[in-house]
Image (tube, rainbow, N blue to C red):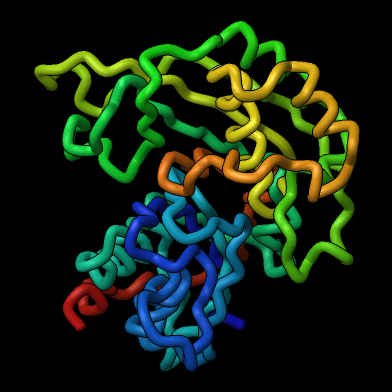
Length: 303
């Protein structure tokens, strides 16, 4: 149809006040999910079709994203041609300006494109701050955006040795939390990257106090429920001397959710979905030449 298009959008958010990224059922009170706000913004563009966003990567309450993605279909009224990608981004951000959510860019994609299933990899970053005895010692720009530990140092060598055990293809049953999807998802995943490197405060050049940060990076095609937070918790426990490297291996080898020690899971606020990657060829859309010029869409920024 001339007035119908499928879009892939990339968006970022500070997850502190949202109940995760996916839509919250209408009968539940309280904060909404990021998807709720994105769909409301799309609806303000007055499409003919009911809008349903399909998010590529689920994140929980308090988890952030530097770049998540989702696809949706949009049919315009009066046989108007589809929005250009730039106009779509501007219009959505206009309607999202009260939220800590921003659409960074968009692609018009083929009609059979699927944001979740076409994703080639997902990368997560977990931020840790050391020597923080009270949250007020952190700059405002890092509060609720890292895991602050009282420890002034971690055994990074032990953490890296434990991280090496997680790289490759394994049954990660011990590192997934129980949820309704468990019977339907294979626990076998391939970790392409599990790395630990120095990080920094978001304002390290301008803050009066030196705070040491570390970043843990995890890359895979897909992850199990809470897998990154559970892997992070185990690696940090190894760094704090609470678990030995051999104990981390025993947890992995047990392939049992109940083998994961209590009180070790890393909190949500330090976790960021860094990127969702696609094959460039999957993002190509070839449109037939059309004699209809794109109308002025600026009116959609003022509704």
